Structures are given as structure tokens and as C-alpha cells.
Length: 114
Length: 114
Image (tube, rainbow over all chains, first blue to last red; front, top):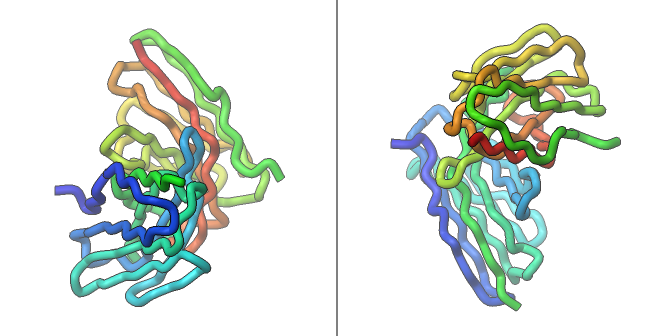
């Protein structure tokens, strides 16, 4: 079993829809949770970052972490065609400090249709 | 700032050939790393470096060598290419290896081994 599981999709939604992207994980030592966005044939770029549990909002994006369920989510409100990309969750354990070791999910490909 | 740069963008090798993937950053980052991205597997850490002269193995290091003689450069060497090394390779850098530091990714090198 992989440490981080993410449904690869693809996920296709109409413009303006609310999108929910999710990851589950098995390692209870994970404390840092990130979402990266990767456009086609480009490198990933950090979208959202959360430490431990709770919610974080940035514009149309909301990241949620539920450590009791080992489940993280990224919500995109009022989705736009420019949001079409692959979204990767990534996690790191506190004990991995200074090694920078991130464990990535497989990535979910999202297409927002005009 | 150019950020993280990678060369070449594309490469085709024959089985058994060797080559070096170049990575450079101009942000004075101490931490640099190499990932490979395969369909359905997400990003997997190959090798990383927490500073000049210091390298360590990641999740999938076999068949790859690294060295870090300067802060700016972190080349990845394939010693004897195999078809299983066909992948997209990403270099990343961050201020330090601490988990809360954002990792900046390069544009990637697409490698095909025949």
C-alpha cells in the first residue's frame, strides 16, 4: 500500500463548478501537507501549504486537513478553465526535518470546460 | 532570477549509454533534489543534497549518481541507462531541507531509453 493515495481522475467539470480533490495517507507522522499544481509539460508549483490540522483559505482555494481520518482535501470554488492542470498532494513528516523528503500522491488531472 | 533551470529538455538514449542531467539554481538555496515522475506513480525522490559537498539517497536511487560541488549546481548522472529509467526528471530547490520551506521545481527533462 502506498503511503499517499490520490485518485488520478481525470476529473472533468463545467466552468464555475466547485471542485473537490482528495488524498488519503497512512503515515501518522505526517505533519506538513501541501498541494502542488502542475500544468501540462511544466514543473509543479506550490499552491497551498498547511501545517498539522485545520483549514486554510487563499482566494478561491481552500485546503483542509483531517488528521484523525488521515484525509486531506483541496476545494476550488468558481473553477475556471485556467485551473485545468494536474494537482498533486504532498506530505512530510516532522522527523524528516532537514531532509526535505516529500511524499507525493499520484496526482489528479482536472479539466474545467468553458 | 531564472529560478531552477534544467538541461536538456529532451533526451533519447540507447540502453547502456550514460549521460548527465544538468540542474542549476540562482536563488542561493542550500537544499536541492531530484525527482522522477512516472504515470500513476507521482513524484519519487531519487537523491537530495542539504548543501555543497553533502548528498544522500532518496526513495529510488539505484542507477543514479549525484554530486554537489557548488551551491548552484546539482547534476544527476545515469551510469548505464535502462528502459526502466524512461521518465520525466525534475530538479527542485529550497532554502533548506526543513519541511516548511517551499520547493521550487525546474521545467523537467523528458528522457527516453530505447
